[in-house]
Length: 291
Image (cartoon, rainbow, N blue to C red):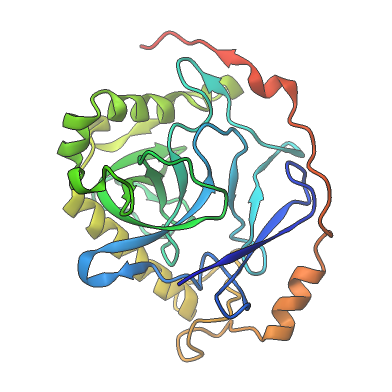
């Protein structure tokens, strides 16, 4: 499968949207229409890259917007950037989500004791390439971290692009620990500290911040796929989430929209424009002593 992108609005502004098209040129939802599996027999998943490594703009699939384009998160009326907390610079992996997954906010996880965060499951891709925003890649799961964000379970799956030259040597979380010493510890540190510059407390983790292995990660991904199926079929209340899609079977989703309707959704957004300047404050570094 191949996908193309269409940018609307001004990058790094409130009106920026990144829409997806499939190989037929049809607008699609990266949340609902891109298959979770790239190869189900090998447990290879699709990943939608929201944030390329080393960048700060907090881009995310807009789960409440029609067709769920990627947009920049907003905080207090301004587009949001993650702070640089020493020794990190921006995101330290290619960051994104696995399509057709959903962390159900009405389901209390038996391992973490917390409900889901109402988003697709997050992934951190640790390969050698810096990916592009909106890129759809094929990944294999290596392990998973259970972050607790303001009382909600926010899983972070550690993955690698199957086409990466290191992929053949990385098959489980123990391989990451052995071949990339310090990377997992840095990952926990990044997630623990990244909200502290905003005046929020450090994030906490289930399992004492220990990563669970590949099998646990795959099981968790599959569970979130079941939650998504219940969401897209209408069995679970969607709340404010937008389940409009163009490719899910009509028998599986009451929210299928026509080609003309999808074109109207895109046309109603701002036309493409020049990129807004990134504020100089985004370059600031913060240092916090670790407890």
